[in-house]
Amino acid sequence: MTMEIDVTIKLKQGVADPEGENTKKALNLLGFRAVRGVKTMKTFKIEVESQDEEKTKIEVEEMCRKLLANPVIHDYEISVVKREG
Image (cartoon, rainbow, N blue to C red):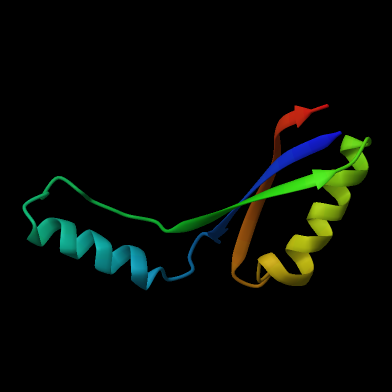
């Protein structure tokens, strides 16, 4: 069975987000003055061949710790979005 996993990586509360802040400023300059904040985040869509959803989540957690996220500044969320097969 193939599973599609979404991993969303975002900065922890209190960590500066210069890209989000610059995007907010640019939007304000473009006339979107109601924008009060912008936060950046990334989403990885990972397809995994597996029969065991819990084991797959554990493996994706390990992927996050080893490569996808920096545990000092990032939080992440893992969710199974689709199962086929």
